View 1 (tube, helix red, strand yellow):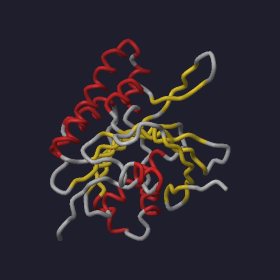
View 2 (cartoon, one colour):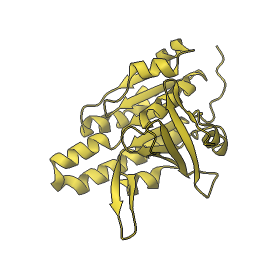
View 3 (cartoon, one colour):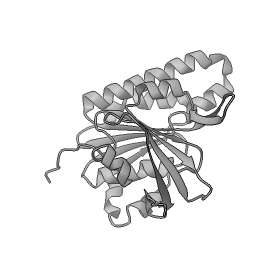
View 4 (tube, one colour):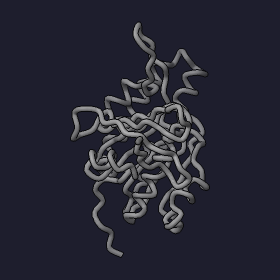
Length: 235
């Protein structure tokens, strides 16, 4: 079978994909971040399915234990056979996560188009909670892992998609959220999508905060459905 060249990977969210000229950029690192239950993992699975629909494999590294085979089957309902193109790995701690990332070139062989690290900061946060005296060392290691992912994306010509939890940021005017270890993640990510809840638990506000092609943020509303995440038009 002849596989077409992989360019960008569609997220399935029309306005975001149009702005990104097709979807999550190839050969770069992208970041999706948000609070719990804002669809980060669902969107990552959706990207893996869309990558598989182009004939390419995905290595899905589940650091948070949130990957759902049922969710995958719902999103890929019309193409159930593509689940064979999604390979799942589950590191148990931050050290194992480092080993997985360091050995990615061994795992990502011919016909791989996407690597998903979901959630990149989960095991990192657990390690800091257990060993707060090692915060500087762990930050340095997280930075090294992100640098490694950026290099792999460029050299292996694949897409790297990471997700992250958020923390609250307080100032005199308002309370906002940003990714855990935001300075490191935002430095290395070429594309950043923020997922924020609304009053309706099924409706998410998605903001394309950073992209190679757009200088100003783009915001749209997304609906979490059984078949995945899709654009929602507010009337």
